[in-house]
Image 1: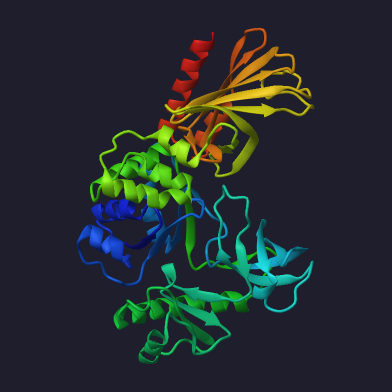
Image 2: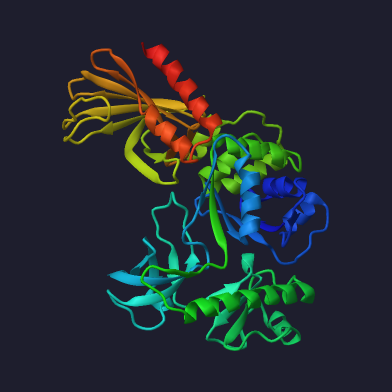
Length: 461
């Protein structure tokens, strides 16, 4: 398998992939220098790129290559999750325009909504129109954004070394004029398709570009057949690639630290810190250049520099094993312990009851949540405006990460509650069993969740 890798996990993933016998291609100059070896600039079978929020990876490419990469990554650590995307990068869909929003329209694509900017639409569009659209930028399941769509159809290779664009001719785009001239030395593209050379084409040789053009040409045949055939509303007409999303938890990031450390100096928490804040990347690199032998994650220093701090707002971002992300609420940080915990206070609105506690939710109630970095659980104590305890809810989850603006984890369903009368109850074991049966939670992770829940139950009784 040939893979291109980009983003904050690149060094660790390059080491992981090459160690498993795969070929990493189209690497950057720093990676070439760090590994002190030659890498080819040929066509990739799969493209691994860090997501915009730095929480994980997008894997897009040939189905066999994506499956191979998935098997390697899912075995990385107990809190690594992976989900298939029904709207893969480059998928072509018969969509329906639902409504106008800002500078574009929202399109229903096979039950998933996407956003089509007016500038990228193929002509005028309005609500009710049927449109053929292509997924230009997919989004992870934990994101609150829709995939970005385009009305222009293109077919290329993973990582975009060469892309053929329907309805165009000649060179559509290239890194520079000299690189554009290389197209004249290649075989002609299919009739009715223009050639776009992506980033990295200027470093690729003619053999690599020729191979990429040939692969893209093969894909255009299937796309042309799909576009010429009958289509119903919501049909995925063609999907040249598969897309998989990989979420890294805290233990995954520290395991990646260890893999990276086999190649270059790496402080404890390297990926954890970079995942928390884009501003942290250069400071981490600077620290590693000066004093790399930091063997314990310096939570106090990190929180002091980047947050969260006392008075800051902090969201509780509650990941689900199916890939969704639910924000349980936002509160104010009232305490920060440099050893790795924060206390968050939330004022509640009235209405309904507290989940599993059967206590009435009233205006003026206060929820106090204590979150500890790396812990597999956290408690929330609910009190009335007069201070009377209404109950305690202990959530069992993957190890918590306290990022500057949010606490993140994946919920493991089973929880423990302590009612106002002192009665202790364990809940939602059935939901955890169902998640295991559905393949969303591994047996090892489920066993760990049950062990944690049992320990909490004993402690509260």
